[in-house]
Length: 160
Image (cartoon, rainbow, N blue to C red; front, side, top):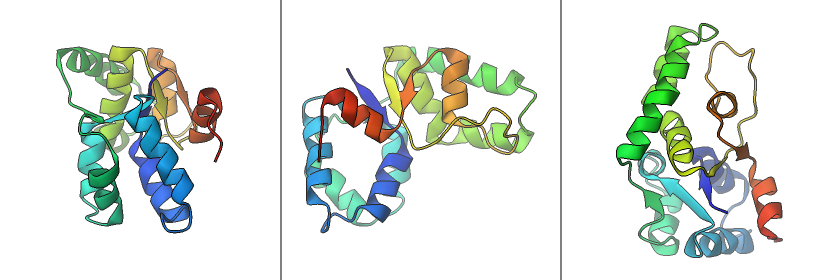
């Protein structure tokens, strides 16, 4: 099974699991990337690279060159579905909708939809939230599976 990692997986890990204290965690991520179980998208890479910190260095050293998937015509078709659902949903404010389609969130859901894979995110569903479109709610709406990092590790039989 392939999992697509959201930006918050990397950022939260960097902040809460420092590489010098939790090297086995970072090695596990690298191994799962190397065997193709974990992937992500170019838009996530772009968000991470804005940080210009140790996480960027780790990505350059530890992940396969093809780890971040570039969008293609299938992604764009799926993005149309994701964007249409978001745009037509009256529960969200216009600002929330605009933010969702302008960041990697909409793209990762679209890529997962186009490949029938699972999104890994720290976000939790909150269908009553009006200020922010959340990945799990969009996944539920368009038929994409999602889980948190611990559930992905469990499904893959990874222990650290």
